[in-house]
Image 1: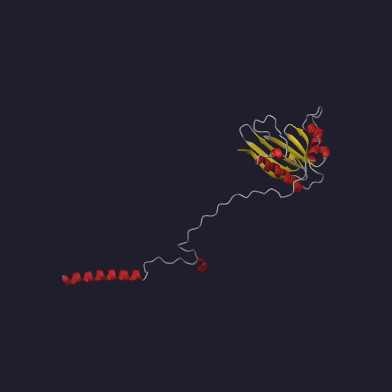
Image 2: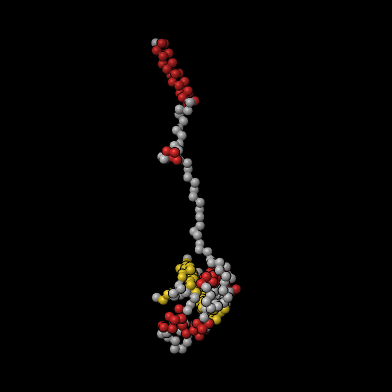
Length: 210
């Protein structure tokens, strides 16, 4: 009887000893990760992935061209005509349109143009419609009043309007409503109601927001 008990105890002690021997040899450690670069396989224990950096949506920068010289030649309501020197290059027209936008954002439009909206319920620049010309005859006030229908007998002047639009070198539009919604756009040339200037290029456009 004692012999049988001793055999069981001896076997149990043997197993315990074997366990500690194998443990010291690293038998029970998890296998090392497989190097995927060497084997072409995926490691069963991949390193945790780093969180991707948060980036902002890139914004198209304003052109760095020099601003052209200009002057106000006509005003009617919230519409202003600006005259630049003849044959002003497109990059300077772009720079002027972007400068108007930046000044609107910085609340510094008074440095560039006179107030455009007399009711002023939302500020003196709550509605802006600017047209840029490089020909004095087309930037004149009589042409603006004619195209806006403020000259007697100026109704149904479709051909004149189309010709007038062809001479627009650039355009900037901004408008706010009483609920603080606003829209803004800028372009080279002019495009509206089926007409499109040969040099038309949309620079930016923000529909009614928010």
